[in-house]
Length: 193
Image 1 (cartoon, rainbow, N blue to C red):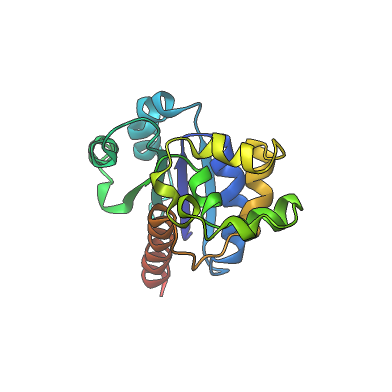
Image 2 (tube, rainbow, N blue to C red):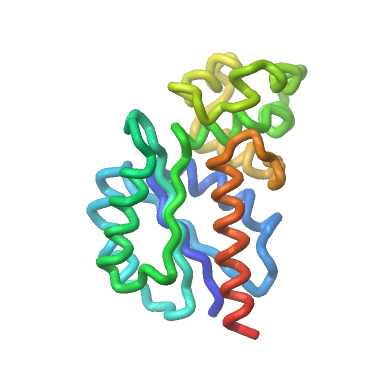
């Protein structure tokens, strides 16, 4: 079975992906989202989860926030090492949300406006900080302030995921996640042909 497996730092990423993926994946590719209880739990269990996964056709995408780590390449390298230890590194990709998952949302204020039913939110998109939100220090805090606390992590992520523009390029980390999903989907479809 062609399956994309997402290993995620937290439930909010699962909520976002579960509403975004049905809009983009081919009907021949299924997906499964496995959230962990934070980054330490993800790192502790990642290698074992991948190694023990029973579907030999599965492809894995690991998604974790950069948070306060000064260098996302170090975070990515550590996760790639864990994938290597699983023995299935050739079927794994790691993506880092710079700084937090909410960066994806701040890069697409039109989606946030639609999802949370807040008028005139998209008009803030041209401002400097929302043109390149991957550089913000605390995207979660910024989003809560911008939405006057109407954004709630899991429910908000689920609602916003339905509206995210898949071709949005304001967040390089979002663009890289979408590219990884499309690449893995292509591998799965090519293997099943």
